[in-house]
Image 1: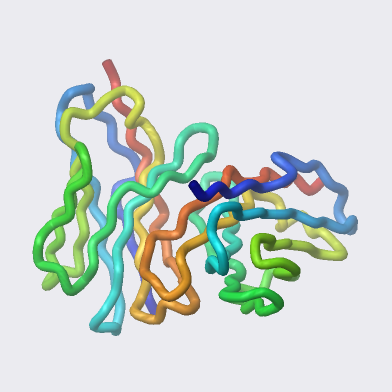
Image 2 (image 1 turned 180 degrees about the horizontal axis):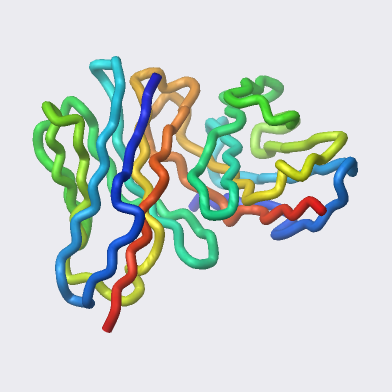
Length: 116
Length: 113
């Protein structure tokens, strides 16, 4: 069965710095898809960035980038030039190759606090 | 542009009472639809998914049921609420046959007392 683990419960950083959030996953599928979402204080869940298992290049979207280390089953999220409004809970999620179920398995989340 | 809307925004219900939560997707035909549940302070757990009208598959049994009466509508319901049903319910959609990241609605906060 697939499993996603986020070991960092919470992280606090000063704004304008770079933060990395860890995520490791377990799957038996050779094809899978990894996603990062953030949940704001209002509860809104926002999709940030994805990495497909067959792609070697790390994905980048705006000030979000990924550190995909396939041999280690690791997909870290890097946020550069953090802003106060980046404070949120960040979830890592994985979907295995079967697209019909669309089943996403989520990690427990990492609370990011960005301070002035 | 596609929009996803959930109703109601919040509910306070008594144990043993019925529940119906709704989700509507506009701007996309035949999307895949999903229901997720999140306990307070917890992670998201997928409950149901649907790839077409009238077809719903259960992922986790929580004494809840789901239906898709129209292409753009997804309903979550139960006849008898339990205390353990409290939490945040989120509807999500993605393109059929694609590995697009599911996109979420605003959610419904449910308190069962």
